[in-house]
Image (cartoon, rainbow, N blue to C red; front, side):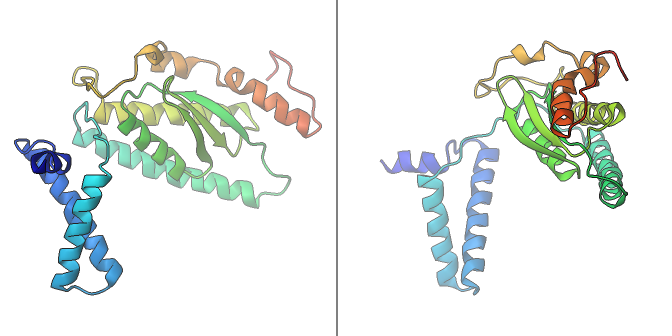
Length: 233
């Protein structure tokens, strides 16, 4: 019985990385407990360890599979591009707020991504949410579809820019974490590969305006404008 309980806290004592990860979680929970009490005392530290062990025992987090390798230079490039996107989008959103005239036409656009693991998909979504002007509202993990609110879709250039920026971030995430020659699906992966039918180049070259046209026409109708006819620019 005691051995089974230990295995729930430390699943594999022979796996050094798993043991270190669990110990790090225990130390973090202990630190949070001590900070909540506001005093560093032996009693608070001991109580934090007991509470942390109880949390790890009764509320264990599911394992997150790591299915690729981290490439430092690609990760640095991703960070630099992210900073550049944040700065550029901040200026664009500020201009939309300060310029004369009415508010921009916004819409919810659908973006298909090729990111394989849920962990990397979560990182991509978090990064998109930190960029001003975009907010991921829903995720179809089965088909790898993101439903993103975009603050400005009033022009074909703006719509195409959104899809280009999304595809660029996606390529950088794949280069940093999920290169095809190094990625191996974990037994816990559980998601089929049906969503890999469309390549990044095909998706980038697809007419972004056509993908967003139904939503744009609806927005124009709501504003009393005539829907744009097919074939018009």
